[in-house]
Image: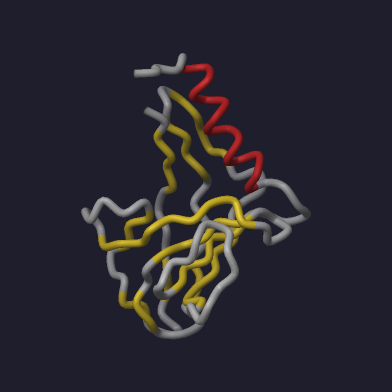
Length: 133
C-alpha cells in the first residue's frame, strides 16, 4: 500500500482549490437531479436545482490531511426536485469534480439535511471538507 507524506497529500488537496479558484469568479456548486453523468460529461436531462457560488479564494484551512473550504452563502432553489449529485466548477464554469448527494449520515460525498428540495426554499451548506487519507 502506498502511503503519501502529509506534504504530498496537502499538495493533492490544494490542487482542488487551485482548480476551483481558476477563472474570473469564485467556483460553483451545482446540485442536480438524477441520473449522474460521467464526470465532466454533458447533461442529458438532469435538472439544476440550485447553484451556490464559492468564495475566491475558496480555501479556509488545510491541516492533517483535511482541507476546509469557505462555506458559500445560502441560495434559493430554482426548482423542486430530488437532489442526486453535484458538480463543482471553476470560476469559468469548467468542471472540476462531481460528487454524489445524499441525506446526512448516508456516506455521500455531499450530505444535506434533506434531498427533496423545493423551489424557492433556501439551501445552506455549513461546511465543505475534503479528506486525503
